[in-house]
Amino acid sequence: MKSVAVMVLLVVALASFPHFVRSAASNSNNTNCAGCIGSTCYDLSRLNALVGGPVSAIDPDKNTYYYQLCGAVSKATSFSCATPDNPYPAVCQQDTRFPPDYHNCGSTDKFSWSLRSGKGPDAGFVLEFVGGDDDRKVTVEFVCDSSATGGGHFSVANPSENPIRVYHLQWVTAYACPTARVRCCTYATKQDPTRLQSICLEPSAQCPGTLGSQYDLVADNTASSCDECRQTTWDSACCVYDDVATQEQLSAVCLPRQPSNRCPATRENKTEQLVTVFRVPDCDRCKVYSKV
Image (tube, rainbow, N blue to C red; front, side):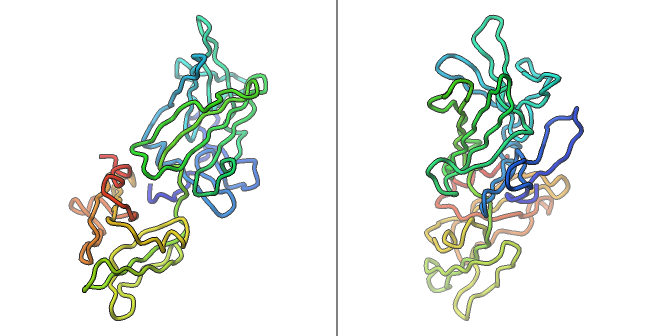
């Protein structure tokens, strides 16, 4: 992937997997992997690449829910609830019978995006899948937590089912935060590297190397808003690199905030290229972006 803001809009044949589809909701460019609510956009493709196959959670009644990010629960799995009439389940429920029955809780081609109840766009979003067995449907609440490590935590929400046959799951993760909408250029003086100034530009713009005669560029990163750009209490820069040949994310390097510290354009004998830079309060926050 080339950046955090890449949207995976892959059209596949009916028999293939994963199954990406466009939303029937107001934003026709939304998929079950990436979408926008108003002017705020989200992308789950990096989380999907991190966790791989389906994730699972168990409710208080011992029912197990299997959810496949950015696709459908594969027919090849032992817990698949796919049927000829509904071949692409987003979530399968394994009940407590012996042997268990498997229920389709919502289809990948019948979904919608919305904000979390009573929350702003920076708090995350909700994906709702409908069209399951016997009118079942499921909501997956994605909670934005920039401090969450790895893929975060997937669980059953409380209540897990309310009303009957309407299920609620939750995923707390840094990948539920909005993708970049602006470019932040941060500058410091050579005399005092803690004295910072930031400017906000379009995401495709380039940061000038200097700001006036006193300030030098010390960080070039992206943010969800210009207000976030103005928050200059960061301590480190997280440099994220992709493999030049495969475009897959390889690593993230953390640099302390210093005027001379700039993320190199390439590393590891030029086999890795810089794709984005994040401001982070400490280097532990940088680890979530690294796969190695």
